[in-house]
Length: 187
Image (cartoon, rainbow, N blue to C red; front, side, top):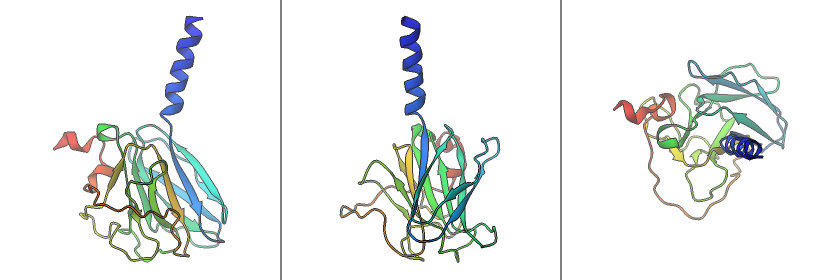
């Protein structure tokens, strides 16, 4: 009996440690999400997000990398990036939307934000360009949260998926917060 109880607790701990990104399609375009992990990170398979639907992807513990979307019928070319570092320094999730690779991509990744807390920061834009994304490598735009579930909106209609009336200045972090494991400990 004790073994079963311990096994159940261990399983519950693993379940609660799961990280996710929920992709929310805001228009009538099917898209494929392509994932690129940092060196040594697990591979995440391509993800299809159907027009007007939501698709949730489980992300391994400690995963650091990025993703971008390609609309059906378009060339697979990296565009606006969603960048994440799950379970990073201080066990926080770091995230941002980056226009560094292709700032002309206004059809894919739009916004990212924590799924379970409406009072936390949003990265990205409903209409591009905006001041809430990375445009050059040393912008300080990375957001952080204790949440391990993120939402990423996809689409071109300029509709916000999360309307919030409360606004405050949130702490932003340098880009290495989402590209370097345990970045604060390296300083």
